[in-house]
Length: 542
Ligand SMILES: [Zn+2]
Image (tube, rainbow, N blue to C red):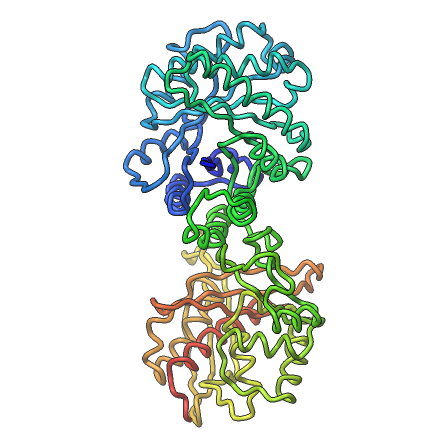
C-alpha cells in the first residue's frame, strides 16, 4: 500500500494555545519534517496573515529532498469569482506547487454558517479547484465537517467530493473538524467516499485518474489516531496530522503515534526504518521550537514511553528487555529508561549506572547508600531523568576514593537596581556582582565578577577562579538554563529546580540543582556542570 503523509504542524498545529512559530522556526521545522520523510508539509495560510506569506516567500529557497510544500486556503467566497478572490490569488502566487483548500461538505454548515445554497457551495468547490488546476497547481480538497455532513445528508457530502474530483482535485480529504466521530462511522463514511471517487474515475472525468481519499482528524474524543487508522483500513491513502498531536482544543491526529503504528504494527512502509529512528528527535525538536515542555507520556516518543520505575518491572527488563515493552524503543529513536525514585530498589541504581556506561564497581553497600541519597535528593526536588551528568557525579561521589576537582567555600551575590544619572533620572539598570571562594587542593581562590544577572555573575566568578587551575575549561559554556517551580510546593517557599545544559563545542551535558532559593539551585547546577567536565577531562590527582 502506498501511503502519503501530510503534516500540518505549521498550520493546524500552530493553532494550539500558547504556540506561535516564527518564520525561522517554521523553516527549521520544515527541514526536519523533510528529513523524516514526510511527503507534504503544509506551510500556512498566506491569505490570512503576513507571517505565513513571508514563510512562502522564504520557502522558495528551501531545498527539500523528499517533501513538497503545500499552501492552505479556502474555496472562493459565495457569489464571487475565483479570479477575484484574494485568498485564492494568494495561493496561486505563493510559489507552492500544492494547494490545499478547505470547503464545506455538510449541508447544515452550508445553509446555517455559510448562509448560501447547496448548489452555490458545489460551484464554489468546483471553480476554486479549477482555478488552481488551471494555474498548474496540484489541488487537495479538505472536506470540512465531512463526517457530520455524512451523518445528516450523506448524498450531499459525497456530492461535494465528486464535484471536487471532477474539477481535478488530486486528493479528497475527509475532515472530522469537530473531532466527534467514532471509528466505525469513520470507516463506513470512508468506504462510501472511496466508492464515490472511484465512480468518478470510472467515467474518466479525471484524466489522471489518481484522485485519492485522505483523512484529517481531531482529538476531541481522544480518537484522532484510532479514527485515522480506521480510515486507512477503509481505503484512505493520504494521512494528515501534526507532530506531537499539536492543534486547537485537544489537538490533531498525532503523526508521532500514527507513523510507528503503520510501520511497526500494520506493515505499511510509509517512511524508511532509518528515518523512523529519528522520530523521537523530531518530536523533541518541534516541542522545543514550540517552546513547550515535551509531553513525557506521549506514546512512542515521550520520555516515559519506555520508562520503568517499579522494582519488579526493572528486575524484569534487566533479565529480558521486552518483558515490559510493546516495541523495541530504539526503532523510534527512544530508549528504555529506568527511573530512580522513592519506589526504586537497588537494582534501579545499578541498572542506571550501567546504562551510563559507568564502570565503577558499585558494591552492594555503596549502591544502597547511593539509592538512599538519590531518594533523599529527589524528595528535595532534584530529578535526574534529564540531568545525567549530575547523576553520574552522584555515582562517582558514592565511591570512598572520589576526589572532587574543587570545593565551594562560600559565595555572595549582590543585585542592585539603580539609575545611571546621580539626579535619579535616566534609564534604570540592574547590576549583579558575585564573589566566590573555592578550594582546589590546598589552595583557596577568591574571585569577583559582574554579570547581566545574578546567575551569570556567579557563573563568571566561578569560571574565573577555576580557569587559573584548569585552563582547559575555557571552551565550556552554558547553552541553556531552565527554571521550574515545582508543582508540589506552593507560596513563596516554593521549591525551584534549575536545569542547565552545557557544551564544550563537542559534547553537551545536563545538570540539575534544587533549592527553595533560586540562586542556590542555580549554583548547584552550575558547579555540577563544571565538576562533571573536569572529572571527564582532567586527571584530578590533587
Ligand atoms: Zn483541522
